[in-house]
Structures are given as structure tokens and as C-alpha cells.
Image 1: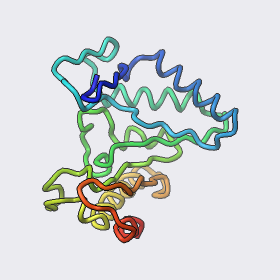
Image 2: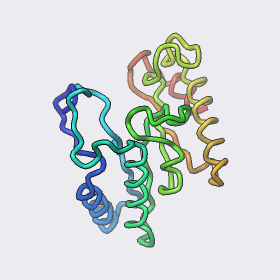
Image 3: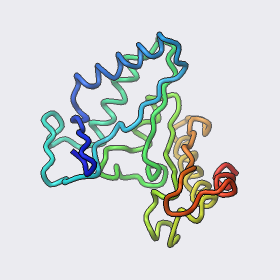
Image 4: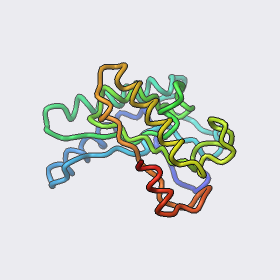
Length: 185
């Protein structure tokens, strides 16, 4: 469980993979035009020292996640379902898995779109020399999206495969329409 008391399943649990593929197929059959997978990662909040992964224990997190992404792709291929995956914003600039198993290059081949959650408030103090990244939305979004687009193109994908989630909530700064516009620009 994390600090909020929310329980997490082992990201490598294949029964959960099957369930998530079935939910996606069912949602599509009911008229949803895109299936967006969010929180597809290992947990990051809570007492990480006491955590135990019955299926993934001892495995490399990003390899577990890549296997899950590949599984979803295989299960949904040929169905007509458009898929997208939400990734933590720093996957656009980091090449490690951020200890949550998410690596941009591991997800790109398996989803139609990748949506990095590039909320400026979620970048740490000092990131890219910004004392408070939330106060620099244009610069944060521009830099992260440029990096993600270049990495996407390096694998032979269009840069339009990357679609950011933008911040429109007060955290780290008061988000006015002008600050939201800076992100869009």
C-alpha cells in the first residue's frame, strides 16, 4: 500500500494483464474510441523497504513493464482498438526507469500514442536548473516534448505519437489560463 492506503498489484501478475486486456476490449465494444492505460507502473510512494512482488520479485522492473506492454499489444492487435499509455513525465528526459519500470523506448512500439504526464509541478527542484519547474511551464514542456519527440523519431516513429498531458491544477504554482497557454504553446 502507498502512503494514501491504496493497494497496488504486482505489475508482473499475468492474471492482471489478462484482466486489463479484457477491460479494454469490453470498453471498446461499448463505444469507447480509445483505450488509455494509466498507472501502468510499479509503485513509488509508501514504504518501499517492505514491498514484496510475488511475481516480479528479483526481475528488472522495466523488463516486466515492457513484457506487459508487449502482451497488451498482442492481445489488442487486429481489434481496431486505438491504445495509449500514460507515462510519468520524466520518462521524456530520463533514460533509466525511474524505479517504476517506465522507459519511453519500452512503450513506444506497443501503443498508438504515448502521453507523458509532463506536469511542471512533478519535476524536482533543480531539474534543468529550475529552482521551481512549476513556475516555468513553457520551458519544461518544450524541453521534455523535444526530447520525447527525438527519441520517438530515433525508433522510426512519428513525433505525433507523443501527446502530452498538461497541468491545469495548482501545485508548485498557481495555474492561471496564461500558464496553461504557455504549456500549449
